[in-house]
Length: 351
Image 1 (cartoon, rainbow, N blue to C red):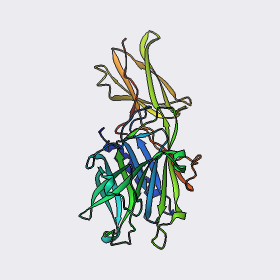
Image 2: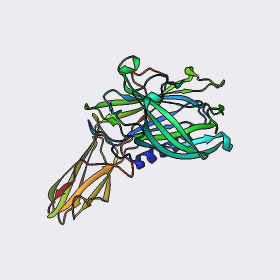
Image 3: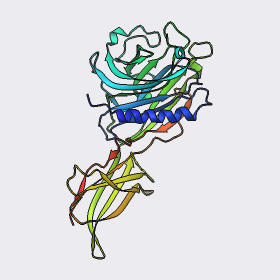
Image 4: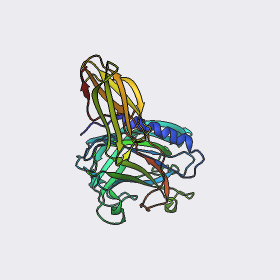
């Protein structure tokens, strides 16, 4: 299993804090940010799902998370195998409504043991579990995973991840009276599409109604829009200016078929080796064409690299997906501050 990045998970949790503070007056406006760790075509790596809602919202009954067409999902993990990590923020009724942060793991389970759940009955392609400790008690939440090959969902999705929650007032099945406010979980099962394009991760969220029963009419759709591939290119050549020698660095930043403009790019260098080219000496911004160029005095052989972090931004429109009313739409973040997107190669030049 490829290593799941905790920095990616915590960066998405930071996005959750912003969402929780900015939507306090909303009725039911869940938010979903999906962040991949590898943005090359045909590549794999951990993917983090970050889900948030405010405590004044109706509690969530069910969330369905759909991977876009073109993504492959490996569902070969054996029961008990860890495939990811999770963190959550929970409002606990048994603790007077206190907000309690929890962490845990995502593990594969035996689908044959999870066929009679009322929320998602039947045989599934895979079942995962998120296990955390809440108020001193271990809590396990099943995740039902299915490949999609037919039906209306097959028009926009390759797989579905379904998670169901008990109502906070149901102290028989939910003894602590827990209400989910935020959850971020990473899994290392997805492989990117092989074709340049725009890919939409779709989330459909269904709340409980005032009667404590699921309110299907209140369902809302959210999306994270991912352009692939995302590439940061860097080139260097030696130039002379008024008798002095410079390294001329040029670069491009593209996401799918678009140039990424006005984006900060950090330049790093080393005179020792490519491996040690980690010290930032200048930050530049890409032009409207997604390019940058800079002259650097050159006194000895120098290796250069570039890195950037593209934050998630608000977008609009759910495209052709009409599975539920369109709610929040965002662009996918690229990298994190701790693990930014780096240039595809380290370049070197001599005086």
